[in-house]
Amino acid sequence: MTGSRQALEIRPIASSDLDGAAVLLAERHRRHRAAEPAMDPAYETPAATRPQIESLLVDPTASGWVAARGGRVVGYLIGVAKADATWGPNVWVEAPGHAAEDPDVVRLLYATAAAQWVGEGRNNHHVLVPAPDAGLVDAWFRLDFGLQHVHAAREAPPASFGVVPRTELTIRPATPRDIEPLVELERVLPLHLAGAPVFSRLPVSPREEIVAELESDLVDSKYLFLVAEHQGRVIGTAIGCSLEVSTGATGLNRPPKAGYLAYAAVLPEARSMGAGRALGEAIVVWSRDAGYEWVATDWRSTNLEADRAWLGMGFRPTFRRLHRSII
Image: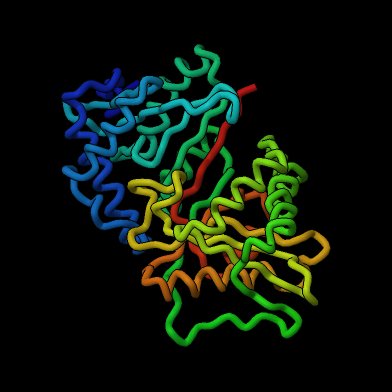
């Protein structure tokens, strides 16, 4: 090779590289926040991003590389593994796990990393990429990654915004008397995701586990359980909480002061009544009234109903989870 690529050195990441990597991540986050104001301004400095990188490297499954030119770090990539029982042999490049001056440097870093990961039998690769960063998203797409999951946020609505469900629907807080229909609704989403076009392999929890969880969570002040009722029958549910409760949105991927639309499901035979949107809007209103400035949610991109509903409610993608399966 000739030119600048000839001088690029790719090697395992070392502690002496962390300051340079932190600068790159802070710069990436500043660009991200300029495009999406829901992002947390706390991570716009290297002093704040370095601990995020270090938190990945303390994972015993972590492996990382840097790209350097003339001794200066111009890119880095770190992968960690999650439970094989859920994800198969896997690697995750989390939100703080990659940044570069040039997106093509990430492609070169992945070429080195993937050789080791696949050699270890870890063939399911996931990466969280800032959604507005078209160059970085394109770099991963050109590595044969595809969109799998969407993290999104929107502003809390103004005081004038309210929920106006269809006249035949009632949206109300759930009570312990609703456990039986809630058990059915807790099974609706995983069963829906198991079908086309998602084909999720996550199992449906046994009934006794669902009941025990509901009995605990319905009286837990951390959660708001809502139900949609039609002619006296519970046909849908939604759960709201602080985004801080979610383990899927941490650090750079967590808008500050945000409520969270954690779950929503409607019985298949009732999906044309507008219950899902009414429940989602009710969680958005609750978030506003609870003092949150932002509302976040996430969904599988192949869940067509969720994709249509949440984008239609003004949620904007903040991070895209991309996936590559090497068969």
